[in-house]
Length: 236
Image (cartoon, rainbow, N blue to C red):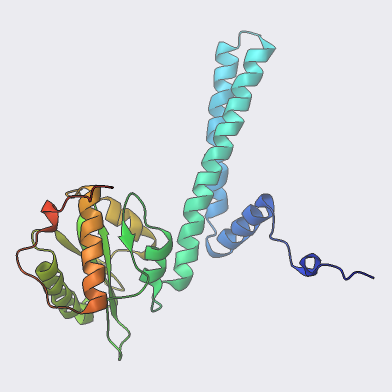
């Protein structure tokens, strides 16, 4: 007898609706207000759609049905958007304050042309404070993980190193930690997007490649190189 394929014993991934239900359950567990905010986001467009249906429908059942359907679909869309935002916040709240939390955000939540690594560029072996780097249209951003009283010197040291490798490139610094003026972990990706763009896409690629290659090779830094004047290589 032929042996059955082992693929039958492989557990199947949950379907889309089951995944959404799991996300909802996780969000509700860590965010008690999420259900009420989602409900409000769903009902508001439904009420608006019903109002337009009664106002503009003029007794036409088809027009009334279209307005009601539009309100329901709009409510579902808003509820899903709210669920996504609250779920992201709930997920990050579970790892906030732990070593490597900033790296998890840089790995999974960067957008609009920003690139970063989940591995820190500087780590304090005793306190586990760390500094991460992200590169985007806004320039180079150094992100500290830990109290600013312990990470400020690490940030200053890394800023000097970056300034030597990529002169004339804007350098910003952000802090993720327990301080009152620190950036919350779930708002880190949005804080990067808010930085005013100053580099082109080609310059972002050149700056990131240069910083990455210098970190890997540890070679001395050549003088007189300005990544702002680097042009994309022409294809053969």
